Image (cartoon, rainbow, N blue to C red):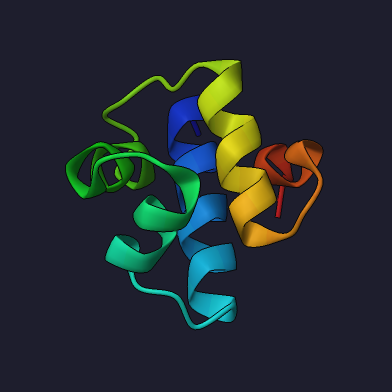
Length: 69
């Protein structure tokens, strides 16, 4: 699995576990919902700054976005 796909799948899983919509997570992380959707699909390659914003909004350490589940 490509890293973009893995990170996107982890973000989607964590978001759903928290009961958040894409819109709510995007708002909390300060990004466009379309960009978040692209990240979750593995189509976007987010910067470290965006990954940190997403992990903060999800309440997890940034490394969790790279888990090999």
